Amino acid sequence: MPEVKTQKDKMTDYVLNVVLTLYFIGALFPVLWVFSMAFKTLPEILSWPPTFFFTPTLENFQSLFTGLTGASTGSSTVDFLRNFANSLVISFGAVVISVFVGVPATYAIARFNFKGKEDLAFTILSFRFAPELMVIIPIYIFFQRLGLLDTYTGLIWVYQLITLPMIVWILRGYIEDVSRELEEACWLDGYGRVHTFWRIVLPLIRPGIAASGLLAFIYAWNNFVFAVLLGGSRTAPVTVGAMQFISADALRYGDMAAAIVLAAIPALILALYAQKHLIRGLSLGAVKA
Image (tube, rainbow, N blue to C red; front, side, top):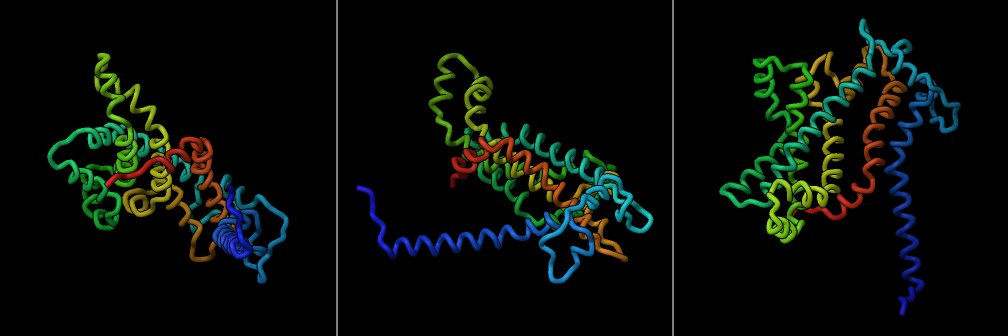
């Protein structure tokens, strides 16, 4: 028989729903406020009391695309489109390389038993939670001697410290969840380990690849420390380029808000495109102890 809720249970559910709704509105309000700032003029942004009803304008976005209105900082001009393209190249490059390297590496860690396996896995993970400032000085000296400062190759390489550990540790749980009997059945049919991995394991862990790849992309896209210290004017991503809207004479809130809105689009598109795999990946994947 279905459980009949008492009046007290209904009241508890009602209060809980109200609290969750208020929390959701409070958590979402800063996002909505920044989004609205992107379509306001500077007087409307700075007005007090705040302006909630206004006539939207595309002036801030025109500033980003043309660099002619309010996008100059001293003697230079903010080339946000180049910063945007730099972020795409660096983030996508880092994630693609991390997937190609991380998937086979994760399979080896999950399936083979060898001395120091857990130490190796923990070392890879330590690259993710270790403070970036702890390793930035030796990396800077290393890059300076190799001529990798302000290069796409150098930034993509160093971004592996962010993307590779996440992919390895998220995918490990997926591979360990794949039954060994499936692989053994393929071996009995005469297929090799590589063919078994390609035809059996890889399709089963595709949701995990989508989930870990998207999360790795977001972390790479939002990185600031590596980009500001190892990059330069030629390879500056959006996180560094956004600083150019802060100058001695003004803070261009509208331009910064428009830049934030545009910078969120790639991750949003990827999340929508990989939604089916992402939901399954985040719900089924787990890192085993």
